[in-house]
Image (cartoon, rainbow, N blue to C red):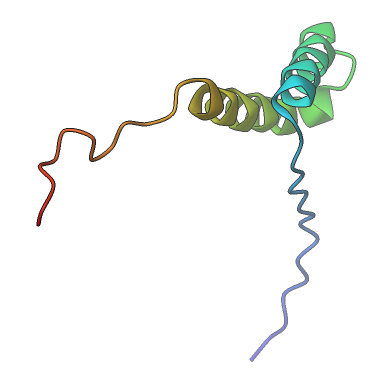
Amino acid sequence: MSHVDDDTVYCNVQMSLTSGKELLQLVTALRDSGSHPNLDAVFARMQFELTMTIDIVENPPTWGESEPTRH
């Protein structure tokens, strides 16, 4: 069995909604500046993750709310 080196780095950071919105603005500005082309895919992923989680906090899913209550 051969060993494959994996140089992948992970960063899972929790923050307040306010901080998340500010970080999204910062990441968007960095990406739009084009000054870090090697990080473009990372910035895009961060924008996606932040946008998705901000939306969930601001507009919580209503799964199951229309389901009848079982007694």
